[in-house]
Length: 330
Ligand SMILES: Cc1cc2nc3c(=O)[nH]c(=O)nc-3n(C[C@H](O)[C@H](O)[C@H](O)COP(=O)(O)OP(=O)(O)OC[C@H]3O[C@@H](n4cnc5c(N)ncnc54)[C@H](O)[C@@H]3O)c2cc1C
Ligand code: SF4
Image (spheres, rainbow, N blue to C red):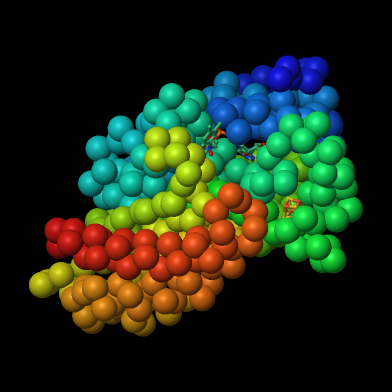
């Protein structure tokens, strides 16, 4: 499949990038590593007149650790750079585990953390060639007016299918967004809409510039587990991240769990801290978290695996991830 024609723009600064986004609103799209948007353009899911390559922007790939504050990852930091970071390995193991499951080593060399956070939602009826989609009469998310997954409804249920946001939610990550009026910093959890179409609350003239990992969650143990069709390279069809703050005797002092790959957004699981704080981790507590997670998971027929199986695997992975995170050193 060939790419549609487009004009490549390569800003050197965030200000220049925002100016391009503003000037060409409606005709321009951001490209970081391009590992997702380029295949999608080949499938004619996007046919922008301009593609904004943000990799030449100075400082956007910077990784900075500030004692007392935490770690800042520039949006174009590659997933490989995070994987190779000794600081991340020691302080934010749940993030490293999630990164290691993304795609393949070659794609992680190109793919960025910003692109992973802003990844488009996925559906069996959407991530197909133009001819394939045309033969089915298209769908609401692109070019059509019906949903094959939930016929009769007007909402798109395509699943958010990136791995790292579940881990980042467990770490209490925040993000920095540049716009024509300046910068704003928001919790990552407020970025997502839970709508398969307008998946993130970024205006078309805004750019994600960096991600903050707070020092307060440094040193938490963690685990990430995912279900995918091919073990060596595939998007999550269900993913669970767990991060625990362990005290003496490996008693849980704080805890978070999040899921991805099953709903149109990644979600923190409510009540996980209540269930775990003050207790040493056990299989029973893992099963409790599994139950809580499966209540939030709402998989539909957006993939080749059945919704029932994916929800069950959320339960299984949540239990295993809690047990694994509980084995971390205190
Ligand atoms: C075969 C294959 C397997 C894959 N498997 C996985 C997987 O297992 N798990 C997974 O999570 N992903 C997977 N991916 C998708 C992809 O490789 C990763 O998600 C990667 O991190 C995307 O980053 P990128 O920089 O390449 O994003 P791009 O493709 O450049 O961009 C992705 C989206 O984010 C937007 N965007 C990028 N950067 C910014 C920014 N700074 N501000 C605002 N918007 C931005 C783009 O406009 C685009 O909509 C897979 C891809 C392929 C081709
Ligand atoms: S959930 Fe429905 S509208 Fe959304 S991509 Fe799938 S078929 Fe299309």
